[in-house]
Image (cartoon, rainbow, N blue to C red; front, side, top):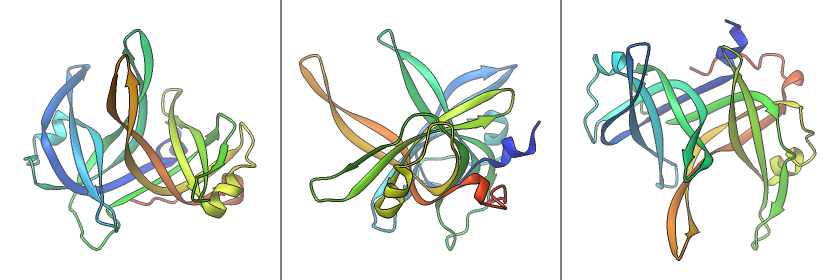
Length: 214
């Protein structure tokens, strides 16, 4: 396994468990469960982030609703069929359950990958600058995860000039965002997940972009 494929997608979260573990799937006799983690922002708002956890990790840790949990892993994507359409789903694949430290940043992610769609730059009605980036992050066994990222202000202006195929490194946090969508005659609330970028660089110009954040 390429070392960089382990280091180019790193997440660490500390939050509160919401709900009970739900069985998701099984791979080679190993069961995996879904959990939701509520992670507070500095503003007091909460992000509800989905986790995928092996039953082997859950055996040695309490995962009751309301309990604090600190995890390290990777932000991964997969396609799910809904109403004969393929939908991109995102989850934090937990590699390790850690001892939490309240003084540490409760939500940090670092990705190194390739711009796989032309970035979309825009401004809000309040003149706030935003740029949407879709990042392809290589994983072991010739797989890739497709992670939507959003940059703000001068980072948005910088990212707007990236080309498809360009290799970049982003650091930030995972955020959840509710939005309204018309489904037939009804309007339903859906949740999107993305990386809110605090720092962004061209990867080739960052000498130690593989340094661990965990």
